[in-house]
Amino acid sequence: MVTRQITFEPDDRYHAFLTICQKAPHGDGKLAGIAVAVKDNISTQDIETTCASKILKGYVPPYDAHAVALLKKAGAAIAGKTNMDEFGMGTTTENSAFGPTLNPRDPARVPGGSSGGSAAAVAAGMVRMALGTDTGGSIRCPAAFCGIVGLKPTYGRVSRYGLIAYANSLEQIGPMAGTVSDVSLLMSVIAGYDRRDTTSYDRPYQHTPSAEIRGLKIGIPQEYFGAGVDSRIADVVRKAIDRLEELGATTVPCSIPSMEYALAAYYVTCTSEASSNLARFDGVRYGPAADTKKPWHDAFREVRRAGFGPEIRRRIMLGTFALSSGYYGKYYAKAQVARENVRRDFARILAGADVICGPTMPTIAFRFGEKSDPLSMYLSDILTVPVNLAGIPAISVPCGKVEGMPVGLQIMGRPFEDERVIDTAFAYEQAVTG
Amino acid sequence: MVTEQDVVHIADLADIGIDFAELGIFTGQFNAILEYFDILDRVEGGGSFVFDLTNVMREDEAEPSLPQEEVLANAGAHEDGFIKAPRVM
Image (cartoon, rainbow over all chains, first blue to last red; front, side, top):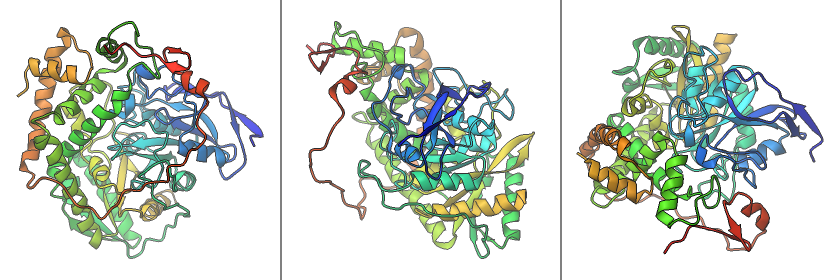
């Protein structure tokens, strides 16, 4: 089936890639010959896949993730595997075991995370489009920090088969590109039912973006413009929303009271799921080998201590604690009630509004090393994690600058209305790029 | 408030491996994070939810699987077609 190949020899000065496929074969289809970068936690047959972790160094998957198989079927050339925060745990790509990615807009700053390599590869013009994954903002944050477009699809719309799991109930594979049209094009290739993902939903995406948004009702949650959000970012995003109103949309103020505890609910949930998911990395079936002469626990601990970075070990321990006897009710059970409250808040608002708009991130991209304390890093995810808890679609589209750095407008929508979210972003993009 | 002793216990449960030098750092970070998580105490209600969803089960049909040599290719050690693991007893 493969008839041709492209030569891909980019100048990777920002360390966007962990693996570069210099000769990338491709077939025919709507992505024929287009170089697509794939985040390194998505399995690619015969191409090393490490999740930016030492514990998977040398692992070469014997099969493709469903999304990658669909890319190949559409004729795309898999150009390489992009850098990320180890296992997707981070907001800056500084947690990669193989060194950070730099932000092409300002190399003294982080590209955001965890899909920072994919965002930088697109922003630097190395590839036209890339796949990322979004567990708590990992597509939208780097899209905002690097000034590109990134979509977190509705949960269930893109198969997670072959995505190396970190927090199954939250994460989705999604498209990243320089324009809304390309994000839409890539989404049309990767969305659809897959029987190998038990949470897959039969809702293919076949949509051409439309800039017609007259009559669109936009909910403006006060929490997205309040304490903790840089007022300059709030101003830029408000102006972007004004622009949408000029195009015929109307706005309604609203409130998401569950935002108060959404971040805590997110971190309890994702660390709990991680503590279970990452138990499989034991040096037996893949990755650097465990010493089979040693007793099980000793061998296991040795491999995991050497193979996992500090943030991974922190989150596995936090999750283990949250699920442990005597604490389950206080943490995990409460987090699930909180999660349901978040879902209900969004459902209530989205019964009266078609989409919700706000900033993607509360600040512009951090300087390297600016945030070293884990809790303050977690707090920067406050505007992106509610979407994952609720399972709804959300896009980040560039909407201006602060200190010369890009700002992202986040547009959130009803479940399975990724098309409307895309259209709203497209209308904005077309209006400002003319 | 978790103590260094608690963190050692959790690290044991998670088979994560921890040494004395990092214990103080992890313990301090855990306490800051858990203090933040206390905000969940304000969430009312608990227990479980009933969703209008049912499990999706497929037929249990045998399908082709990956060749044994490809599956073993990533294993640290194997013998006679089996993956070799550290001893359990």
